[in-house]
Length: 295
Image (cartoon, rainbow, N blue to C red; front, side):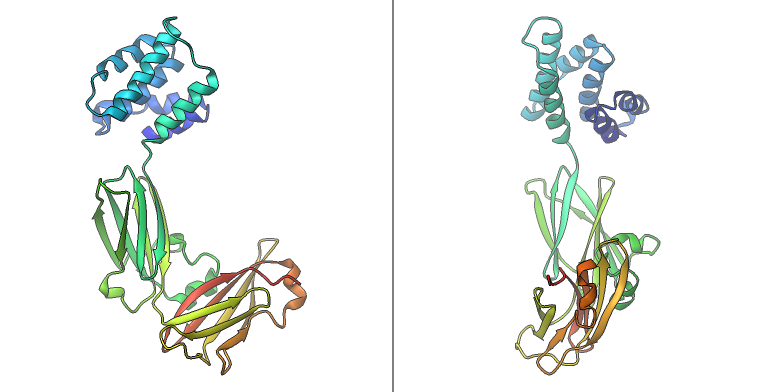
């Protein structure tokens, strides 16, 4: 509720923001500091300058410099309103509010680096990490363009769930997929601050090279470089009107090569994106996306 209130005020949806703020029981919050800061700014909209002034005074000697400066900014705006300082323009005031409030947002970004997940974060002490084993062919056939979307697992219990405590001295961490999933394709989902992100991490020994200009791919063994023939490839296309259709499937030849657009060249002008499932019984599987060749 605290974050929603601040967001609405920054979007100049004042009545909604103030209503959300009034619904918050400040005494029950662990984040009292953030609540007081938002209350001080809300006081300006309620024309309760004295309240904002009193709150700012309480934090005038706060030991954390960043927060001390934020409340000092509130005090300066009180002085400007009372005629004791140089007033900010409306745009300057809004920009300062945006910068100050956004600095407290709990944010993170999740990406895959090989068989590891990389998490970049801010203002987070811990996250929940869920692991889901993926039946890649089934998932691809049902939703070929959302293989990294945890929404399709919304009603499935994770195969494994754990809490990771984050180091406040850094802003990123990398963690490997647990050994239980060492030879499996797995969707890694991170939940924190009311937000969820997910990435697919694949287990395979495939080196895939795409020639998007010609609609060709070549598959080799990741370590030996040997061409992999008889590797199954399934192709879907997302059309410019948003529809998704099966495009083609087949197997790589003795050179490990496959033409993934032939038989459908007359439709390429209407294709927005191509998604390819690549499967080898011996060497694993993965999903790749490609732009359509330009004719």
